[in-house]
Length: 203
Image 1 (cartoon, rainbow, N blue to C red):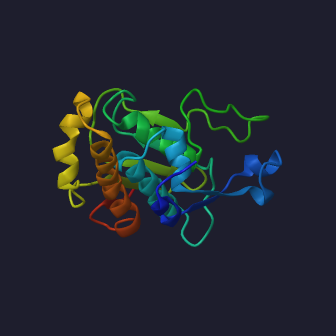
Image 2: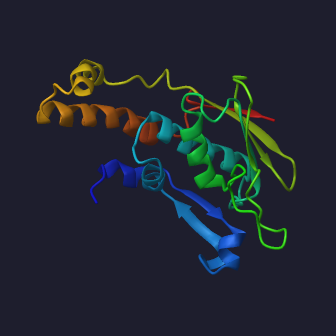
């Protein structure tokens, strides 16, 4: 399986999942999530997937300063319905990193390690940030993704029409993919900790 080389240079999210430890899936429950894992989950790589990955990373780092974050220990509130825009894709990536799931999530063992119901969607578009809350301490953080300072490659826009209309040749399709991933690369490698891109507010 061939993926862009910069995927391996993107930030890594390390978490501890007590359920994984209990069931023998990972030593001490410690697991690492790489950007490629989010790509495999979503089936594609785009600024939304990269942005969601960085949002989840920033939220966990903020809620668990100086310690390994607890996967399954955080609730997530999305400010829009699941079918609004990129809300669903963003939520899937956040579930990957945090373990927080909607009603279709794991219902637990003996009342423990419950993941179902930790991810909540607004009934209508509220706007505003995504809210992350630790279930043990109640500490919360609100995050917003702003991609305006990382614009697309102009070549991407020029090639989009021919690609979508099916008129692009092989070279143009390759060029479009390179330009598309160029923005993703910049997000992951140059703006992972950029407060202008990942805006953090304490809850």
